[in-house]
Image (cartoon, rainbow, N blue to C red; front, side, top):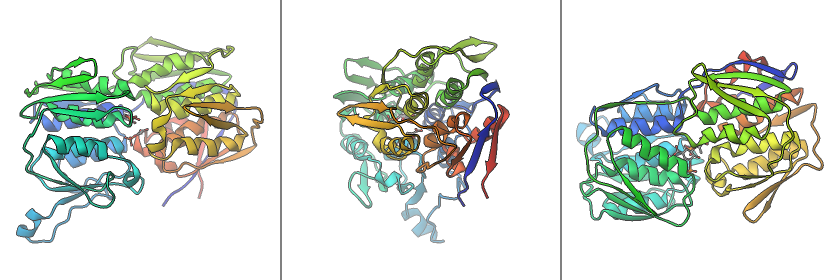
Length: 432
Ligand SMILES: O=C(O)C1=C[C@@H](OP(=O)(O)O)[C@@H](O)[C@H](O)C1
Ligand SMILES: C=C(OP(=O)(O)O)C(=O)O
């Protein structure tokens, strides 16, 4: 059953230490690489993110990897071998895309499905690319969307694939992860603009750590058929999760927060939060094996934020700007409409509750804070999106009573979020 959280915060000073769980993105990649490596690669510092835990369970072939997953078993061995496994990935978009590629080159017949929202998140571009490589995949309900049935019997037809780069980088990562296992290797031509580029760089860097070499010249990434090396892939703490602590610091009058384990060099593009939040007076100092955030009041100059390379930070930054009445403009938000919810619409609807408008003007979105009004109470709808809950939670510093819908939604990437808020002085009550 869904339950809401009521958040309150006494005072506008925030101090504390928060140990973040492992990056969902790094962990998902590490798990797929581990599974493909035939025992050579081991994942270290597994993330608690539900999406990663679900993926790990599926890859380990566990039969109890989650209440939402089930295996069709007719109790007859003959039929069972011919009945595809039904795998329910829930709301985990990245895992859905990675598993599609993973099973496409395997022997098993599987049906991959997910939450109702997952059935609206496009996968046709990846399926077309895999089919051209030689995979047998069918759409079970609507063309271009999950659920999909993947048959075994992959035989590589070509090594050259062209893929659109502007819808989701996850399709590209999915193909790169399996590339070294393809008998003819992979020559991936990225057509048009590449969105979320740091995630592709993260994939290639992690593959390199696992012994897989690549070349990336202009818009072509090439990976030859090659073996994985014996290694451990260490998952760093999650910078996207760190962004909510930056937002809390930005809305506090005074803040001193320590996030252990984060380093100035990260594979995660979302580590750019240190630069983005410098605009709001947050200093990031890397020492004692982590990052110390401090807040100093500072006039805000930056008026344009391009978030194409860090889409998961968009809600964090936009909510902070709105709360501070900073009328900035944002670009690079095109992919937000196909994530856990339509994040543009969700932001517009929720920001309207504090009198702020997010106005779409072609590819630019502009905040209008002229009628901003901080209410005494606010109810935040979360639309099955963990980042809606976490991006709006910092508003409790300004709004005396903030009720957030469906507390468990944060489990997707950051299950300890509410507990961590309590540690730094927020009062978190479950609404009965
Ligand atoms: O590869 C990844 O781990 C991710 C890529 C991004 O998606 P898009 O490439 O679809 O923008 C990001 O939004 C998602 O949370 C994680
Ligand atoms: C978009 C996200 O995740 P996914 O695409 O993996 O569902 C996210 O975590 O913000």
